[in-house]
Length: 315
Image (cartoon, rainbow, N blue to C red; front, side):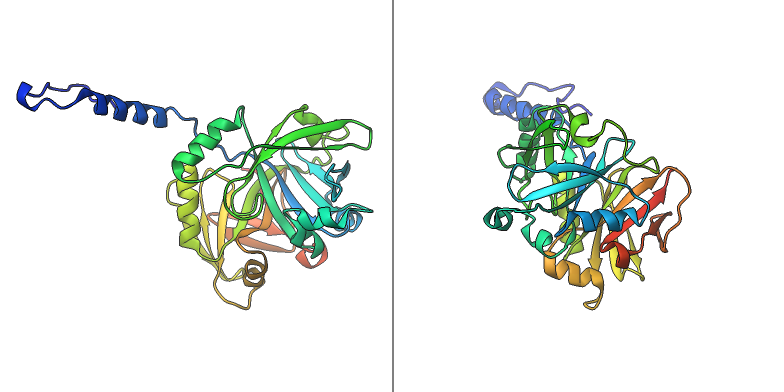
């Protein structure tokens, strides 16, 4: 629907309204309507812990191979990843050998790194200038931090650089995703050896966020990303109320009781990722199955893995 009236009758001379305020109002409306739509395309999801090799071994025992990506240039962390067909990847991040203790303490995911916290963050791809997304978020009542450059050197010596920006809500990539834009070719970041690390999965399909207040969390996401009302359901196994924004990877989960693992998780880490879901290429088999929003999610053995990871079949 056009924001400009198709027909405006001139007011009588004695009651003529000022033209300038109307012109300014129409200009603002047109500027807002021409802003690019928000994107929630998963770039990668991050799982944090103390020991990278132990984390890789636990994931390999579940049938998911990872590749070592190298140490970050922050003197605190190193990483490995499992890359998928759609370009997204699952990142394992841990404290690097001989890390600078002060750098580890200053890291935005310090608590999860030290305590084997598991899912800690997720990132979406920034298309083009981050300034456009900053303007869109500002109009919605949120701030985007100034882009910050970072990088790492792969084991083969290839140097990788990118920049990130955080939305104003908790630690980086916790409740809201952080934005990431590559300075060097993205393929060098996502595929350390130039190929997929696993053929079993198409990508990261869902990010499940544990939250204290479901209604408040829903309101924030709707405002930040201009989303419609989510679908809702209750899950007795998870002891949680769920809200799913269709067409996005976002599921919000509020604990129903104080004695569940989800309740303990949210109490310790606040609002943020508590589980990730992968999109399987073929059939799915796992330790347990949840029926959420008309589909099935199979869960890996969280006791062996150390955190919650699921998979769902391709449609």
